[in-house]
Image 1 (tube, rainbow, N blue to C red):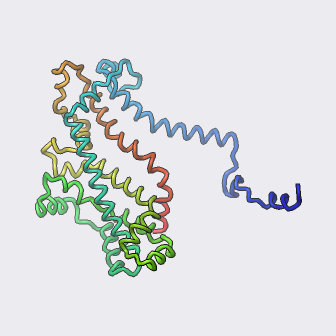
Image 2: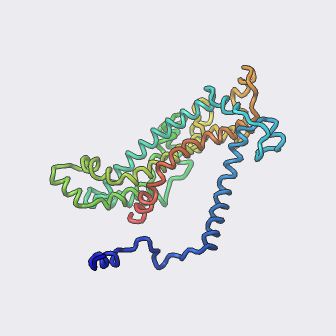
Image 3: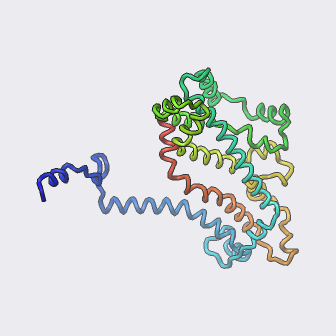
Length: 313
C-alpha cells in the first residue's frame, strides 16, 4: 500500500464513531432501553388490542369477560357489517372525510398565504398584522360570544360551514410555517425576481417546493383537528343526526350510551345481532383507521417540518 493512500485512510472522518457526549453502549444499558421501550409499547398497544378484539367478539364472549374482552371465546364481524351497511355510521364517516378534506384545504390555503406574507420583511403592514395575530393567542372572545357571532350574526346554526370556518386558522401553525419560509434561500428568491417572477410565482415555484416538510406536517395537524372535532357539532349541529360526522356519533352512541339508530335492522333482516359493546368498539376502531393510515407517510417529515420551523420561527 502506498504512502499517500495510508495518509488518506488515516485522515478519513470516522463517521461511525459516537460523539463525546453520547453514552457508551453496554449490554446492561441496551437491555434496560429495550425493556423500557417494550413496556411503553405494551402500555400503548394493549388498550388498542382490547378495543379491536372486543369489536370482533360475540355477545357470549363479552358476557363471559364481563365487558372488555382480552381473551376472545368467539369472533364475528357482524358489528362492522352493521356499521358499513349504509346506516348512520357509514354516512357519518363520509361526512367526516368531506369535512376533513375541505377544512384542511381551506386552512392550508389561508395559513400558507398568511405565513408567506408575514415572512417577507418589507411587506405592507406585516409587523402590525403579526402582532395582531399573536395577540389573539393570548386573548379571545370566549365560547359564548363566539357562539353568538356564528349562530346568530352569521346564521351558522345547523350549517356545515360552522364546523370549519370558526377554527379554520391556527396562529401557532402560521408562525411555524412563517419560520420555515423565512429560511428559504435568499439566492433562490433573488434569482426568481431577476427572471421576472412576482410573489405568486415565487410562492408557488420556489417557497412551496422547498418547504414540503412543514406543509405536509401542518396539513396533518389540521386534518387530525377536523377529524377529531366533535365539540363544534355539539354547539352548532346537535339535533339532526343525519348531519353528524363520525366523531360526534362516537360521542353520542359510545360515551353517552345512546342506542344506535337502525341497530335492529340486521336482526330483522336475518343476520345475527352484534352486542352493543362490540358495536361501540367497532365505531372507535373506525375513527382510528384514517389516522393510522396517514401517519406513517407523514412521520418522516416531523423532525424537519415541525421542530425546525418552530425553533427558527
